[in-house]
Amino acid sequence: MVQRLLDSSQRGWDWFSVQLDSGADLMLFELRRSDGSIDPYSSGTYVAPDGRATHLKRSDFELTPAAWWISPKTGARYPVKWRITIPAWKVALECAVAVPDQELAADARESAAGSPSYWEGAVTYSGSSAGAGYLEMTGYAGPVGR
Image 1 (spheres, rainbow, N blue to C red):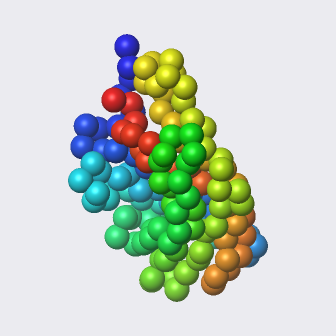
Image 2 (image 1 turned 90 degrees about the horizontal axis):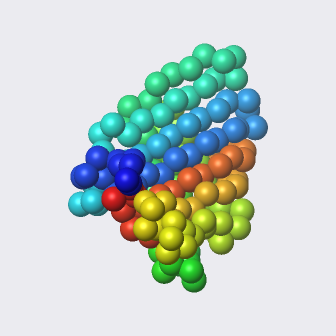
């Protein structure tokens, strides 16, 4: 039995983990719908250097793909550079993957069992602050958990 990971209207997600040189941490995720829109349940958390956490609603931030890589294994087109903005806080970051080919491609048996192909790996951040982190992207090689 295949377990559904997403609602039937959702295709995949983009999840960002950010550790900034300032000592602040940021986690953002967006759920992408099959029609191309972003689910309003997408959100995030900003943790200030002093440990104070602030919840971010989807309307508080913007995630914009800026460059793409096409997987030779699955043909999926993954964003490998992103612009991240939190306008109210004057945060403007660029997220760049360390190595484009970090896709975990499911083989035929895994796909049949419901395991998706997805991209996950190391990224760097620059812009209004610098840092490093992690990015996970699903649903680019096909819907997740269908």
